[in-house]
Image (cartoon, rainbow, N blue to C red; front, side):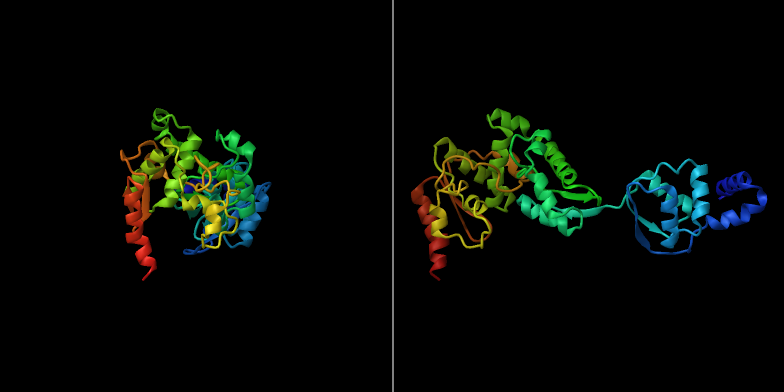
Length: 334
C-alpha cells in the first residue's frame, strides 16, 4: 500500500502538484469492492485511449483519463496484448493494465476424445465458439499446411491429436490445427523409434492406428487388434474392417449394408481393397500408435465382438466361425 501511495504521489507531482493526490488515488481505486468477472476484448489496432474508454464504459474502471496517465507514466501504453480477458470492477486500473500487458488472455477448454474424425473435431471446436467448422475443415484439407507441418499426407486427418486443450478465441483455423498437430508431434516422438524398427512410415503407423482406434474402445485390446492387422498384412490378407468402409461412405446413416461391403468404388473398403486405406480414418491416441509399433505377439487373424465392448480372437477361420456363431448369429436369432 505504501508503494502504491508513493507511486500516486509521484504521478500527481508530475501532473501538477500534490493537491491532486487524493483525486488521483480515488480515480485509481476499484469501481466496487466486489464484482463478478466479465469478458473484455482488446482488438487488433486498439489504442490505449480506446481501450481505457471502453473499460470505463464497461464499468471496469472509474476514470479513463486517469488510467491513461498512469499507463503512460509506467510505459504500459504500447504493451497491450490483443485478446479476451476476464476482468472485474473489483480490480484496480493498475491491476487491469497488468493483465492486459502480461497477456493473461482468457481461454476455453475443448476436449477431443480418441477416435474422432477431423469433421467431428471441427464440430467440437466450433461448438466451443473458437473457430468456424468450415474454416477448420479448410485448414485440415490444406496440403500446403500439411507439408509445412512435416506431415507427408494431403490432409491432416489422423494428425489432430486427441487431448484436452485450452485455446483462446480469435485463432484462425490454421492456428488451431497447428496446435493439435504440435501435440501429435510430441506423441510421435515416443513411438518414432519403434516405427523405424518395424520399417513403418509415420503415415503407415497413423493410418493403421486409426483403424485400431475405431475397432476397440478397450485399451488392453489395442495391441491384440494391431497384431491381427499386422498378421493379415504380412500374409497379404485384406483387413476387412467395417470402420474403414464407414469412413468412405458420405453421410453414413448408421446402417452398414451388404452393398456397402461389395462396393469396390469405396477406396476405404478393406473387404475389396488389399493393404492399408489411402489414409487415416480417425485421429488416434498414443495408445493406438504404440499398439501399432508394439503389437502383441500372436497368431490371431480374426476377431469378433462379444457384445460387451471386447472381442474374441481366433487364429483360424474355423475357430472364428464358431465365435461368430456364438456371439453374433445366436444373438441375432433371439
